[in-house]
Length: 160
Image (tube, rainbow, N blue to C red):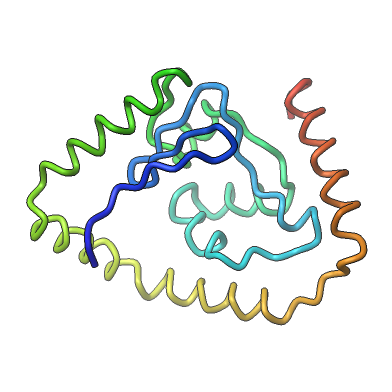
């Protein structure tokens, strides 16, 4: 269990996975269900501890996109910065994390992981089982994806 800070670039939005700063113009959402599939990568296990069960359900059930300020308010991200400042801020936070002695970071991460293991572990198992058992209508997936994409574009233009 080594401490890691991962900076990734997803569709032009840079995300620091440890601290989760987000650009002001970023949008977040979970559209799995609206497309007709279940998440299988741990979303339903990891989202509720971040945003609470009510917001996690709303995000998953409704599939609406939310802006950075709302994401900050509900705990999905830890700070909102200008898009052109996002990578620099992610690197700043990563540098602060890197200052912590590795042994201390491993132990601290272990405390957080073990402290949530029962809840998150059970949720991960339930999600995996449900995703494995689902048989989505593959012929409709592209049609649903296109419809959800268009709805989200309209939502971005007009608001939820």
